[in-house]
Amino acid sequence: MGDVLRVRALEAWYGESKVLHGMGFRLAEGEVVTLLGRNGAGKTTTLKSIMGLMERRAGSILYRGEELIAARSVGIARRGIAYCPEERGIFASLSVQENLELPPRVAPSGMATHEILELFPNLRERLGSFGTRLSGGEQQMLALARILRTGARLLLLDEPTEGLAPIIIKQIRNTISRLKALGFTILLVEQNVAFARALADRNYIVETGLIVDEIAAGEFERRLGSIQGYLGI
Image (cartoon, rainbow, N blue to C red):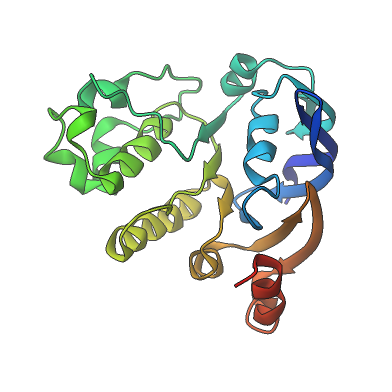
């Protein structure tokens, strides 16, 4: 199948500090691909660069054959790419229902509220609760649920398991598996090796703003020692 996303020679800066040094990778239609690496390796910066959230970037970001390196973030979102940041971005003064309905639709394929609540049944009983009343797991579910309404088909998920209890991590894993089965393409930033192993078709290892290795799902067990070495586990 054809590539949904192809990144080549991607560079990015925070002020005068260069963080990405030529990132290059691809995602095919319907794949789940992870970026694995230590803190500060450049994984989150890669997602932000794809979304046009960095003030300065260079290289090539092809989405379905269209070059996005000069596009603004609003235009990128309207093309069907959604970003779920690690901090989740839940509006504390809005209810779950209001948070859920806030993003605009960018494509007619956006999921209806009842479909989303089937994926996230925990939110059904919390629709009237304000963002400040949600647990960390509920906030993560809401952050994921919110982008599914938009109709975006390429999802960029930044550390969705960070700080969550094992039972919630299992729910998030099952949800991402279902999204893959529905045909979504997902780029996942993770440090949880077990989570990545359960979901990913391919894994890219990131060090100092550069891809240094690619590990397919079928090679994960054999190369687990190498992966742990890269991550300092």
